[in-house]
Image 1 (tube, rainbow, N blue to C red):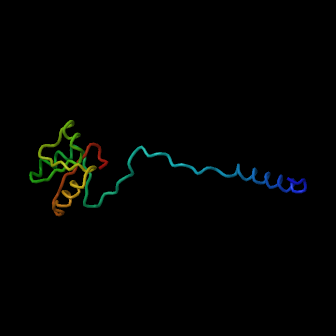
Image 2: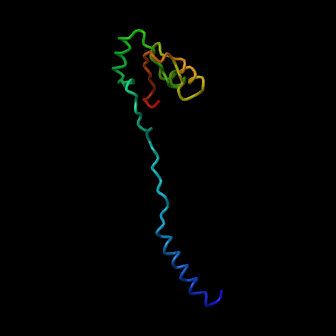
Image 3: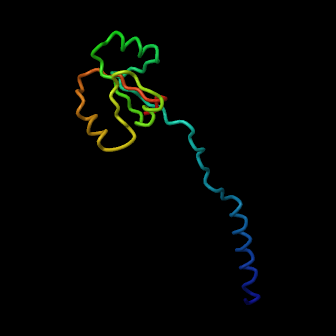
Length: 115
């Protein structure tokens, strides 16, 4: 390198070093530990276990859908008469759900309310 170009190189290098500390790495959002909140349509009502029990007792023709996995239903038990629709797995489940009467009333439940 020629000595006449050295001051220009040095000032350019110094300017670059001053700019780098000003650059921050992008901030990362903390990983969610819970699913995002769900906004239910006005026609959908969230029930407590006690309210669901009362509804089942008062509505003999109510269709009950268990949307947990088959393994969960076997190990944890299920509500008598509930139809199993493994919501998280398979196109067959979605096809079956599409066949349900949309004008009907359904009680849908899962393990913790996230499905």
